[in-house]
Length: 200
Ligand SMILES: Nc1ncnc2c1ncn2[C@@H]1O[C@H](COP(=O)(O)OP(=O)(O)OP(=O)(O)O)[C@@H](O)[C@H]1O
Image 1 (cartoon, rainbow, N blue to C red):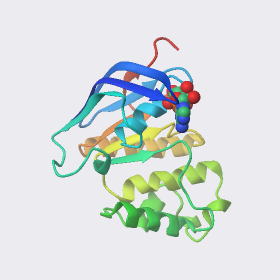
Image 2 (cartoon, protein in one colour):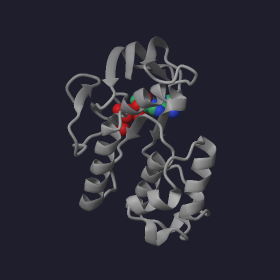
Image 3 (cartoon, helix red, strand yellow):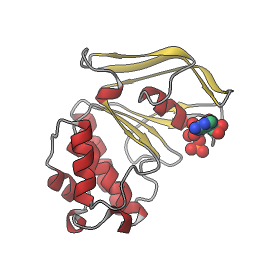
Image 4 (cartoon, rainbow, N blue to C red):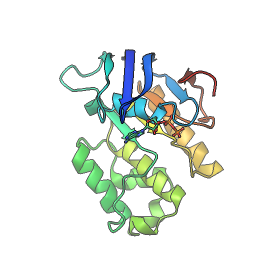
């Protein structure tokens, strides 16, 4: 599997954010998208996830499921956790499992894997920032999708949780997945750098 973008141009609110952007990521590979604030890292991930349309260029996936779009084969983990505060931890994950479809790992096991096994009945609104992030990460495990698009995934994670997450990313890559992560800090795994907007 190989995901590639060519000549991508992104315009937001009438202003060009980037143009002529090329990237590629293959199965088993992590790409760290780096650059200054406002360079367009989040915008690039949102383009790939199909959440905004490119003003130019193409995104192609070779070796994926030809019947599914790139977006349907990708998880997009935004830097703001997409959780419903009044629903419990289990209910939030259940919502995502049903919305995305195709449960690969039982929600209870995914919550154990991210160290939230003790908090399954808590409303998500009661979780700390790091716990909310771990609940979002559990979504990646519950529903199996080969492309992980991660925006600042380790922000709010303590050192222990960063190590656990590094292990989960490593397992995903070993399983033939690929990762593109916008980040200002090291991911904790080997990653090729894609710099947007010149030297930050
Ligand atoms: N919803 C939006 N509407 C209009 N402009 C936007 C929107 N979201 C982002 N932008 C603009 O697009 C540009 C790129 O933003 P983006 O969030 O992609 O940058 P980034 O590299 O991820 O930044 P950071 O490191 O601060 O997270 C910025 O100038 C931003 O103001």
